[in-house]
Image (cartoon, rainbow, N blue to C red; front, side):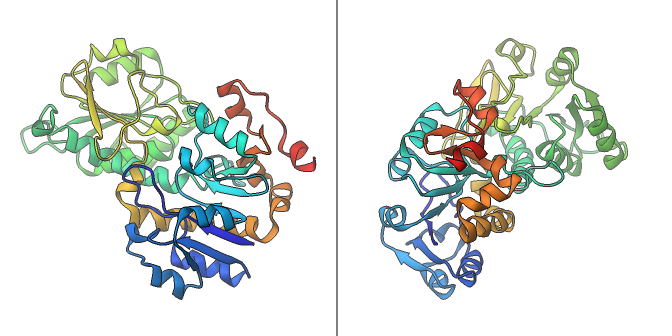
Length: 371
């Protein structure tokens, strides 16, 4: 199979779908790899590094899309990219379709077979291809929130860790999954007063044991959300429903009860965001203010640290990518976890959460693959 890796074109996206090390693995499996010139510049990998790994270098993205059987990316295809996809081609990348009806229409019209990193599962019921970027985003959320909280940036002017004689800043984390855990770990490490809100008692019990009392835990109710958000300096939105749009946990009305100059960091923005007032921003213009509350809603947060992010992502995606390259559609037929990752095939939606979020009929993956 010929595997193609175009340069990412989303605003301030410096990650790349394949590292030179991953290219070597595909080549060792007998595949050809076509990489767009300059694709690895953001991680310090030039064209010669890819050539040394066995890749061919394409002059344009159009060449990559036209000549490849499988496209490996990081972020969801942009309009100019989905127009180049075709039936019989496999797209392997993050998609986040639930809040993105236009991209969904584009993929359906193309006929492409689209496997979404964020819905591939593992034997433990986890999301192994989403986890590494969730870890990065969770840790970055505190860095971003702490920066936005500084007075020159419009924030309240609070130091998260405080100093002797002065109370630390307060951080509320909505959701105790991978993002929430990493955000809480970073905030607690800085010395902040941290509370995690979740509706899973077993998860709260696990987090309580993990942090050994250094982080507070609360069961999620409307009252708990209001109390914790109203008293917080930073609120991190870290709620995920796999494949589906994120629930809106903080309403516009709630902003009036929050501290002026406090910060909302919406890590769930890829899935539509968990604050009612959220809309996607970019690294070039990351924040905006609503009712005196700063919103940080960058839709590709890990793109700010592309070296770390790209290697962490490739560590996770390589195994399934090699299966797809080695076996084609048969890999999806044979592997339940890859079938869970299949979102679109030949003009049909094959993921239930995506279908329900966007109002499409869902077709079972096995059914469309058999056809």
